[in-house]
Amino acid sequence: MTVNAKIGFAGIGAMGTPMSANLAKAGYKIVAYDTDPKRTGALASTLEIEVADDLTQLGSMCGTVITMLPDGKIVRKAVCGDNDSFKNCIAAGLKPGSLLIDMSSSSPVGTRELGAVLEKRGIKLIDAPVSNGVKGAIAATLAIMVGGDAETFSKVKPMLEKIGNQVFHAGPLGAGHAIKALNNYVSAAGLLATCEAVVAGKRFGLDPAVIVDIINASSGMNNTTKNKVKQHMLSGTYGAGFFTGLMAKDVRTALEVIETTGTSSLLAEPCTDIWNKMEKDLGFTSDHTEMYRYVESGSQ
Image (cartoon, rainbow, N blue to C red; front, side, top):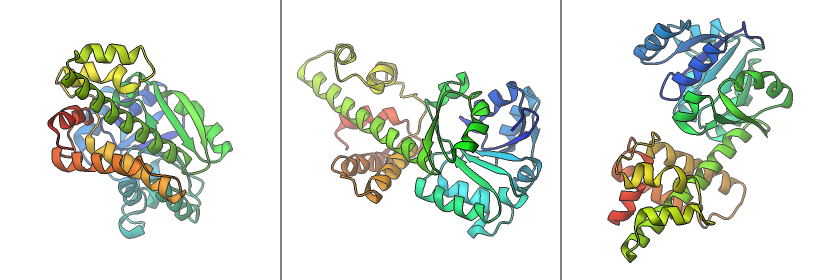
């Protein structure tokens, strides 16, 4: 892969916009596509990128295409078309020998199934989901976990290092999506535990801010206590920028990995139930930090 090769980017949303912008700033020739032309138009107005009219054109213009979409089902449709028809989709335009990089938070089981389908068409698939959110995408400090063969990983790593400062080879195809889901399960469980602890401490008579300070100086410190409680929960802003629906989806994916590997799900099952209920009650687009008010209200 060279800097002069065109890179397709499907999904110019909250994450895809800064990620594709950082690639363009690093010298990569980007061809963008999104179902909302206003997004690609806004990006093209500030950077030298091309805009594809549709997914097939995106594939035909590029040797490598990155997908950054809400979930694996949407990725499958964008790549293979309705019911794997291979019409009006990315794969319809990709030539044999092309590479697809799915950076979405997809099901690892579905990723391996998609890999087998694309292999028959001579298209290679690797998964490379990310962590550290919109701020990390803007600052190019994402953690990127890659699933795929070592040779392909070594080729794409220099490009991925332009959008993330920690790039890991997680293992074979699907490994990136598996560890991303498992990581978010750990994060979701920690957030839930933190909310319950802070609410209980507050009702016991402790100052919530002091609770957080003490936890951050102790063994219970986690990403939520460091970056979310004071900033987004106690402040009442609930603006961390990650939807409840996306967190619930990732936890469900993690539970799928846990169950398919025959691992104990004593904590994963009730954790998934709570996030599913919060998504139903507060809506997909509620901020995931609203778990704090959800726990405080006793709704869970």
